Length: 247
Image 1 (cartoon, rainbow, N blue to C red):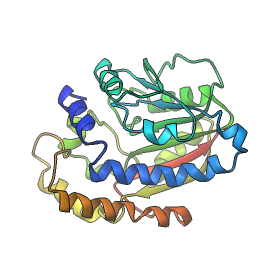
Image 2 (cartoon, rainbow, N blue to C red):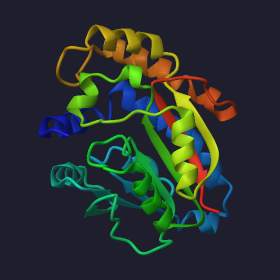
Image 3 (cartoon, rainbow, N blue to C red):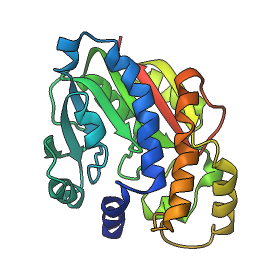
Image 4 (cartoon, rainbow, N blue to C red):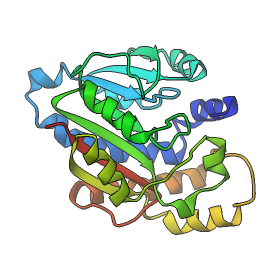
């Protein structure tokens, strides 16, 4: 990711509709898993946020346990430090995680596998499987559908997008067992598809401040999917979300 990309993430992760809606979806997937544990066990959960970026997911994960954040970029970790996070920060590659086997109850990879720095997405998943405890969980989001690839992907070094079938196959090949996999951001898919087709020859990122009323509207539309995700897997969307278990 360009340095400007890290600054954009840092500035917008707390307020921009996309980040707010994604956190709501992740919370919907994660909470039943954590609530199913004994309280004494849940308090001791160890969580790895692999590819933590500028630390926008820490607040969500810290509600469930002790968080470790890992990113290859020193620029990203610098922004994490500016957030005064309580979790531990480590610079390193998701392809060679600097942790022993079976250390974490939950391993998270939010929009990590599609990144150009991940030369082999299956190897990254195998590393996450290695450091995950038995009966632990993988929580993952990533980009969906090649038809949505745009200048936004190029700016953020996104080199691949997935379908539910292709991502499920990768995750299962790494050793995890799928509990749930769904698309998300279904409501806004048509608008985003049109927007990206119109801007297919442009440059730069879609992460830019927008008027507050529009941001509130988009946040509501994306977040309104959370009740649906409690019961059903959505048939399409701009991204994928998955919860898997290590047997």
